[in-house]
Length: 125
Image (cartoon, rainbow, N blue to C red; front, side, top):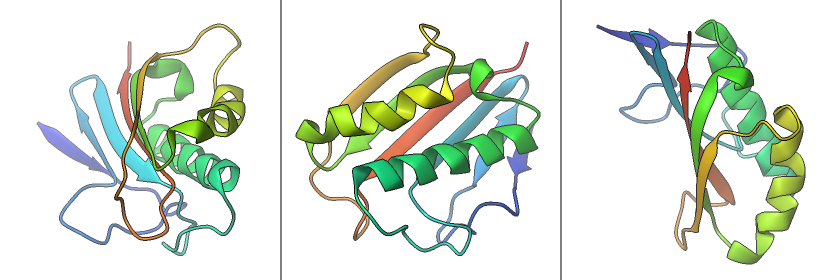
């Protein structure tokens, strides 16, 4: 059974999709760098990566999980050369040397002003 995950700490969805979904012991969420008001945060890759990670953290917490439960992340960025800047923020959300599986690819056209989008899959034990 699919359970919708919501968090008042994240902006509302602007389309036909869920902020997060829990099915059995799995949690799925896709996030971008928006603030609680739903607007894209100001700044560059680092600021948007932080907002993206914070949004994911809030959804995971609302579902009873944390970044320790994340098994896989798929990352879409607007410039492949920005991976080091994105990684500098991303890695601070996980325990050192205990990262989930990951794919990162360049996406040339995303939502206006969006630099990074991430899909998270978590499994609660």
